[in-house]
Amino acid sequence: AQSVAQPEDQVNVAEGNPLTVKCTYSVSGNPYLFWYVQYPNRGLQFLLKYITGDNLVKGSYGFEAEFNKSQTSFHLKKPSALVSDSALYFCAVRDSNTGTASKLTFGTGTRLQVTL
Amino acid sequence: KAGVTQTPRYLIKTRGQQVTLSCSPISGHRSVSWYQQTPGQGLQFLFEYFSETQRNKGNFPGRFSGRQFSNSRSEMNVSTLELGDSALYLCASSLHFGTYEQYFGPGTRLTVT
Image 1 (cartoon, rainbow over the protein chains, first blue to last red):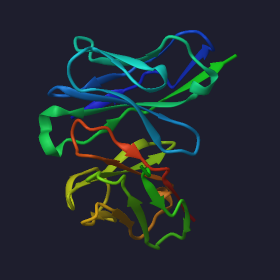
Image 2: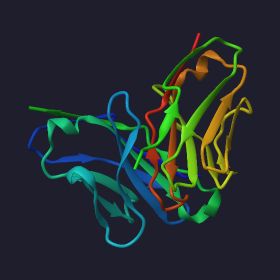
Image 3: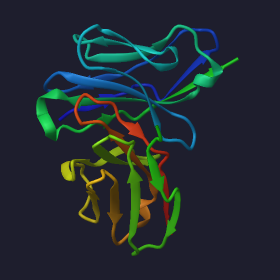
Image 4: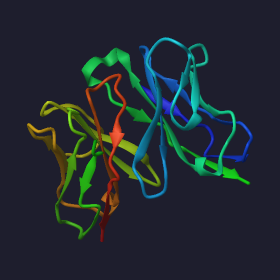
């Protein structure tokens, strides 16, 4: 069965510093990986995805993520954090091996707190 | 282009009642998925529909059901509501399933008393 782990419930970073939100996954085939962000009382917003190709994926709002197959990781990064980046971040995976039956599985979420 | 819309946004029901939630996907999107979000369980997958067919179903009891119409609009129904069904129900649409990203609506906040 596919799964996603976000080992940190919360990440604290000062504005202007780089940030990393960690994600590891488990699938039987090749992974389709996604990052989403959720602001209070809102639905999830798509940030970026990895399907195939370049391991470094660039997304919205200056975020990027690096796919590492050997470590089965897809960490979200940003070179310089903003207070407005404070939100709940979700990593998600879909297994390419299960065809039309595959579902999108989300991690438990990581709360990012950026302070002045 | 209008985003995913969900109605109603807030709902209060009593145990034992049933409820129907509605989702209108982004124009041109043919895949709709439903999720339940709670503080304790996080985001849990309910169902995924494509071209009026249920493609996948999560581990929820049969009280939870859904359908998709020919215009891609979707509804989910929960019968015999329980206190534990209180949650934010999120609908997401995408062009297709698989590699395509999902776009989420604002959710319906269901409270069961």
